[in-house]
Length: 375
Ligand SMILES: Cc1cc2nc3c(=O)[nH]c(=O)nc-3n(C[C@H](O)[C@H](O)[C@H](O)COP(=O)(O)O)c2cc1C
Image (cartoon, rainbow, N blue to C red):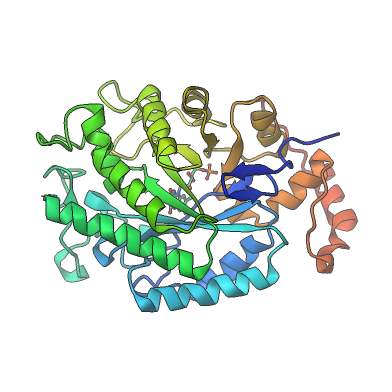
């Protein structure tokens, strides 16, 4: 059996050994933006996961751009040093060829919130909250603070913060930069007509709403060395009639491609607090396929992709170029080893684990057969 999932794919200057990526996942475990031992253990595990690309969690490009006090950042020398320790250790144990990316983010009007396990709502007056910004002075939800509408100076400051964070990531030796432009965070609120009600050249038409995010992408690409790839996580749909659509996302993806982005990862939602999201296996693939077909950029998607055959079918059918998995790897950082075994592909997992395969995997698979419906 030959697997398409386990064939290489090129993101411009960076080639991945397979089409499996670990999607970024906030761990809310940083110290003033700096990675801790939690990140060390997790990224080391992901380094051995067999995924072709490991994308580290949303990392604030400025202190006030973090979602919570526990979010990773890349805005200070201390952040850079802490991440250097994590990445160096991860590279020492990584399966050869594993590529590392980092998602650069600004949380915009959804910044200054509690850790999820402390409620996840906006920080109260006793919790060291900070002022938040957005394209327009419209709060995310009634209980959220009203953001300040960004001025030209504010936009210039944040664009520069993205560039400086990207330069830090380049110094650290990351292979890929992923711009966070979905889930209702700052760049996404510019492109979504729901959150962007500006009347200047950054609001109104689709071209105007894309202007600030594209200016960030252009500046970041210009600041990166040629051997690094830049991609973006974008919104495929806002899941509302009045919001952003897959066709809009394809226009945005094409514009990003023209600026040198070499992949997009399509996600959905997050710009409104209550949304009717259908969910289900592969639920974000349909808008991603529209983006892939119309823009021609390498396209990935996440969202309830959990099973090896499901992932294989998505890439073999051409619906996606690669898959992004989040919770499946959070649950089982060896997901790709099992997928390779199941699909008859070879993966160079560490020899220290070689005796596990025959003794455990087959027995476990027989005991608990996975029977997922076709996507
Ligand atoms: C704990 C956790 C943290 C997440 N953090 C991020 C993040 O930092 N950036 C991002 O773009 N998406 C984030 N997501 C969304 C995931 O990347 C992914 O899109 C989502 O979980 C759906 O994929 P899945 O079904 O494979 O988990 C997070 C999800 C989880 C579960």
